[in-house]
Image 1 (cartoon, rainbow, N blue to C red):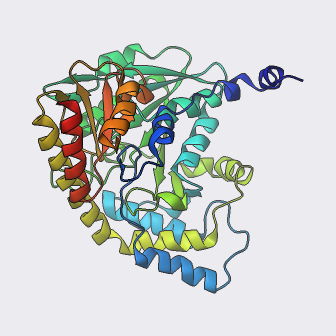
Image 2 (cartoon, rainbow, N blue to C red):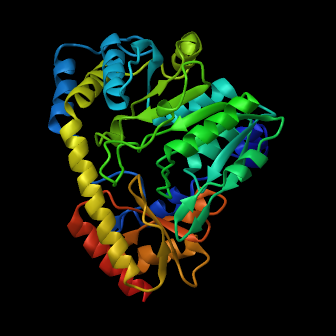
Image 3 (cartoon, rainbow, N blue to C red):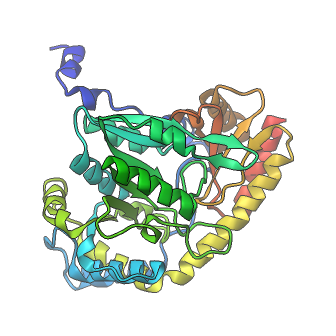
Length: 390
């Protein structure tokens, strides 16, 4: 049997899953000495000791066995405490389900809600895993390109409404957004929710960067501010960003308790639950991590200022200062092939950036830079980029 016939025997959705345009550039430059890697969505700070020590204590206590599929009760209660404290409402532990990463939370949400023949409306540019997860499930992502103006990135709600068809089942909203930094207002979220209600649609809400806002607020506006208990909203979340736990691969879903049996089954048939010692670390993060989140956010704000000021000085760069998340999404005058440009900047500046082609419709002319790093690295990266671009 030939390689071609082997591939052709696979499910189309698996065979046609798109390759990551980010990984393409990372693979080109990951082994270069002295490269400053600003291409992926993580900072340079390791997980805080108080979190790692909670996992160590759990391991020492022998907590290495199978566990609750929905998550240990103590962690689900900690999630309820954290969300209740942050959003000023009481949430019960039954709404929370522990997953093996935010990506698994997204996969479960998508697989619950859509399949072959269904459509999911996604504002773009967007994290490429949204489109991939939807496509692998057999559904069709429907991009709604956002607009960049002097006022920043904006979502045209009329355009969003026009994208809805009889096949639409879900609207996927990421705010604050990766890669643009667009942060929906409470009024915009209320309008999106009203649209979903009118058409009987679900919303998958990715509010993973909700703590990374730069207007002095503790958090970004949320669907929780405008929703009712019966609204069809599933929240996908991760421990990766707030608590520097990208390598731990743990996240959670928040959903109506009536979906609990379905979610539990999907976790069981995928991973059979998250290791207890990792969940103990997550409890420590939720209960003791506010100081670390504040430190990370302040550090990211300083990083944002460094890259915005430095790249603006080149005279060739165009962007909207991001209101949230920790990315600068910028274009370079005269440069339309951003994959080729990202490769060139690895070669000439020894700086790793993600090409905007990875982020779908509307992102093609842009590059994404992660500024969740120490100031010295960002200042050096900006200096290198300025030399290469000018």
